[in-house]
Length: 342
Length: 263
Image (cartoon, rainbow over all chains, first blue to last red; front, top):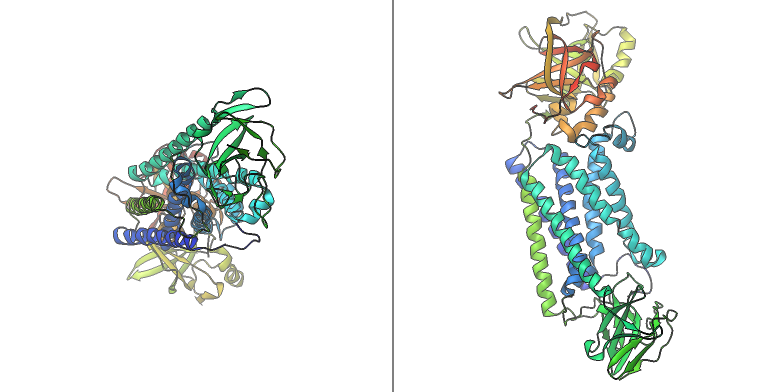
């Protein structure tokens, strides 16, 4: 958590994370160049750069896309999610080198503006095999630019987590454009079963993991609650672990019910920082701590401890014998609610 | 979600538990192996590049007789009575004509005049081209008129191949053909670089035909939709020493729905 905005709030973990990213990118480019120069030495430096960074960006995008669902399926992957934006920005840099060199190489120093040329040099928009694939790559690069340039808490805070998240869901549009860009472009000329197989395998892994995690999430939303209009029966108190929560969907909103120090408190499940699932968090030092980036909230009022100012909605609970009931009507964000004691 | 008793908080030192560390280590190793596998596959499976050459950082001075029929060339004597016609090109994706304009205005007709040109050579498979980057590097050696090549008629022919821009194909880009390069070839030919038809036979022997209209004039814009695609081209073929010329009606070009096989 931070009070003011800095370019990067460095810590030991982020430094190690970024060192691994840089080393992996260097390893890829050096290996690509060494193999090309050894077995296909007549290449040109421009082609080598375009191909090395283009293929590197695609592989990195696949890695980025599987981190989300992996973290949903197994919380041990959450530290990778924590600094994913650095991986995203690095991937954009690789894509920018690929795109920048390609635009200069293929469209610059001609009789029209290079950007105009991207859209007009090949007008076979009606053909699948002759389709102007560079247009698809250009739009994907624009999306990646928007995502990379807003990958900072300043934009997250000013756009609101909801809008920021929606904006960053555009990565899936970029992924679709990039896959089409490669299959309608490079793979039309440089056809290889191995590289086509690699991208198909990547697509299956990315979509498979998303489907499995979506199914698990769907099961959370199907968790049954019943009761009268004012009080819904949610679960037995023994179903909630100490210092942890159980998530229920109440009137289309996810609510996390925490059990701690002989008390129960319920808050809205969505972290104000980046929409992280608070119910998968833990009580640390008396605060609900978000599993994604460690943002904290007090369980009895949904407020971040001072000097922080984030607030989430709270809910009223009651206990009958060992059964937990919730009042589905949410209180305003940051409203104090007496915890339910047991 | 698979529960993990460990709970990592980025700003709490020591909160990264043993199980989580193991998962991160495994993930990093698999990601690095994927990176290595990707580098191996994407680099090793590239199609072979041609040994075409573009001397970007070297300047060479050549001397020969200028002729424009219809594309500007320099006829250079490479051995006793053996001539090579070097295609003249401008900087980037442009024709040589703007660089020749100043001299053209001085002498009215440059055809048959002896010129020295300093520029960057491009060569492959017996053909040579030169990129001119500065009009000051073109020198008129003398005013005398020398002989220029006369086209020798061959026949009406129908050829299968691919229309390329010779600047990229003969050395500037690799590969300088096909779909990936199409938009660049369009820009080059649109900028005034002559279109060339490349045919390759079953023995991988290639022939090169400069494309002109039926009257022997340059064609650039009309041919743009057909560039970088396997095509059938019908026209009248002539020979101009080491080059062929095919005079065509652009509307006779037939796109072939097949993979490019030019080399």
